[in-house]
Length: 499
Image (cartoon, rainbow, N blue to C red; front, side, top):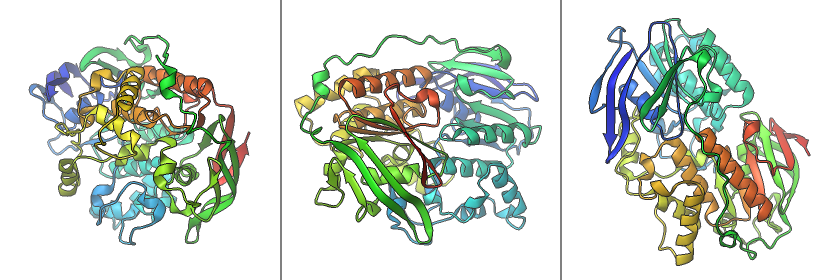
């Protein structure tokens, strides 16, 4: 593969600037760099999904070789016979016609279905063979990622481009994926991996580092260390009074659950859950993919109707005792991979998905909603444009943008941002209303090392100085804030550790 002077721009912004490098036979490549450096755009260009304004891209491969781009965010909504919506899987308000994992493979790989052993082979390697009959809408984030990977591997691509495939997977699943890619793909498969510097596998031979849309350097894998400069300044909120609201924080117990067991039909998702979180405590919620973490969070966040009728108390008040969903959500700052996935696109994006099931060129340039407007939508817990802001809300939104280094993106279309920039915008959206309880599910997904460091530092500052209550989910120990003082761990829906 050879790239010569690849340049691509959109909406007045240079996305790729004079990219040149080559990959020899039997080499594999990692593309890395800070968030917003152009990694995913370059990956889509290599896959043929984006057309550069200038430059050439050549492959020394047969003309029918499949170049397959596997995005960071799995999204199976395009094959649903009916439109799905955010957190639909928790209220089970869908028909049996919604597709299963096996239905996905039937639709995408009809030619191999007579020999289902090939499906079983890949699913077994990625340790998800038990998911064949599961509805796609019911999959956890980590389960969906692995189904997405099996779907890609069944296509037998000659060029396999994986955009942050380890994101969202627990430690064991990440290692399993490394082994599968290293040991079970055909030897002539060209592997291109977009990943962080910390997660470059040993089988990678060449590292291409990007920064600001250009090549920062090309290195042998064994000699590579990141070269871009990370600013080490400390985050300090300029005016902590902007984020103090004593009325909202007038409670003693943030969360209390007594003898909770729930499921769907014969399937038990959570069993005998007893848990109490006092005001100001900071908890890490741990567990493997599919252990029940997301379902537990959905009960707390007002997204799961099965919270009604349970012994579940939030802010000293039993769920279902007269409070509205919006009153509850006003007091919770929430971020998750699912929220990122289902965050409302503009109509043109939605129609594109409906018309072209294989469309992955979803950068959404030209969408009207800006980064600033997405953040401000957090005041009223809407998805999309928000009502007219008060002067105080405008000041607070701008303060959060400054704290998270989002000021340069203020007027940019949300859909023109990188995955990391979008996630950081959603983090600001969760924090802008100054909620007393923060529920942050994999909040650092897509962020580069410096963005993660700054965000974790900010969470520590908020939780210590303003006594915020925190529930934090991460599969990476180094992403846990220092303020964490309790841990709860789930395994197959049961609490196995609580300290």
